[in-house]
Image (cartoon, rainbow, N blue to C red; front, side, top):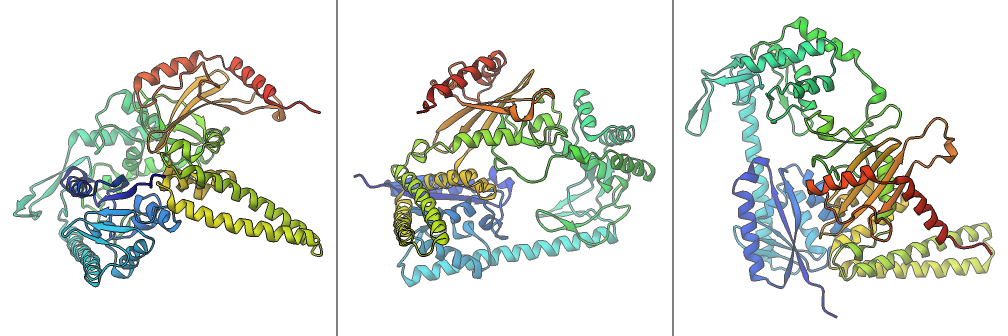
Amino acid sequence: MKPAPTIAFSYLRYSSPAQSDGDSVRRQDTLRDGWLRRHPHVHLDSSLKDKGVSGFTGKHRTDKMHALARFIDEVERSRVPCGSYLIVENLDRLTREDPETSIPLVLSLIRAGVRVVQLAPTEMVYEPGMDFGRLMMMLWELSRGHAESKRKSGMLAEVWTEKKRAAGGRRLPHGKAAPAWLELVGAKRDGTRWDFTRAEYRVRPDAARVVKRIYRMAVDGLGVQSILKRLHAEKVPAIGRKPAWVRAYVTILLTNPAVLGVYQPMKGRGKREPDGEAIRDYFPRIIDDALWAKVQAARSRRGHPGCRAPRSRHVLAGLVVDARDGSVMYVHGHPKVGPMFLSSNAYEKKPGAVWATFPVVTLTDAILSRLVELRADELFADPGAARVSDLTGLLGEVERRLAKARERFDADPESQTWGDMVDNYDRERRRLVAELTAARQEAASPLSASWTEAVGLIRQQQPERLRAALNRTVEEIRVLVVKRNTGRLAVAQVRFPGGAVRAYLVYWRYRHRSVPAESHVPCTVWSLTAAEMTPVAAALDLRDPVDVAALEKQLADLDVAALEDEATKSVRRRKPKAG
């Protein structure tokens, strides 16, 4: 049997989105490709990327929304083959945290059998059994990365503290950034620094008129969605950083005290907090107090809590993409049906976007009901996936029988038969656990083990862990929703790393008042295969606008009633006869 190839996981990270356009990515890729040319027997896995994520806070290491955190979890679960490589430009790409945290992190990877490759400033492989010199080099690099970040953080904090002090005392601008309706004039560059002593903010008349008009629309009773729709319909140029008006920015304009001339210093990353007292008369005022008060009162009167989507994240969060416009699908609250998937472009009232909703729970349950039937060896090029899947199934059956035997033994402790069965099933369970652990370590790709785990979590109905497992094993889910008189049709195309694709057709129908609840079937789901769904072309690519338009026409003309009748007959033919 041909041995499985050694895998090299390439980890790429940069701290700020601006670095994606600079030399950071090119430099890391060039160094990695040079190492791979010198090691032709190694198979590259380049899926580990954390873009715009700091290595100083440790969030990229602990939050499983980030690639490094997911990789560490795979290592801890013994799903990364022993002897694999983890390639980084420098150890500070892994982490810039303090040595008390960074050193145990790297050592834990090495103890698990992962060989950490550092490409610069000196190429070095940190692995089990390494000599004292390499160990000292590892400690030095980790300490240097943390010290450098700590020094920069302290310097920046001092600079911003001084700028905020100047802003409050002398009302000096503290940076080139300004609200969209203002511009900064008079700032001069002095070598590598900017001089703001003669700088001032001036109102941009066109932008200020747009802000005032938005405030007048809010006073007239229009909500954010209606304001957004009118701005798009009249093709009013956007004044923010984005090229088009979005709901979030309109909300910010209506709640930002900077329109009153107030500046509130902030601190922290992510969820920022006020840093000191607000500074009045810092910016030129464009909205008076009376208009501001009217807008805030109008917004408070428009609250409709029953129409807001729940804040809890669903298991497919971040994966569902609208096939028509390529935007991520939001969860939009519906007062009667509940949470609904909706294109974020439609939610933002962008021109050309189609408002087509589909119930979140219905689509999620339909997709999961079919994904649970897929085996890892069908999706990923992994010769060990079939064995992992088989052992997982056997272990689940043995654990079910063991639980049953223990229940019977607890009811009748004197029974020798049930006691022997508990012992036998427990021995079998421990044997299967050992074999499954070994099979996972020998598997060529951790994706297979992750998918096997995801299938188990679907069956166990554990949404919190399932969300992370799906984010590791599913690239995206493209969804096309078409309205029908009696409900909605949706095609969901699920894409997996490596190129595997599965597509499903889901039909959801409204429940009419005259239909008894016990007889109402809320949805039907089909796999788009030649054997089960010939009327709809399964080979279409929902990333291609031409294919999306063709599929939309097919769904509009599809005879759903005939399709359901055929599905019912098929179920009856497969149902075994009584007796």
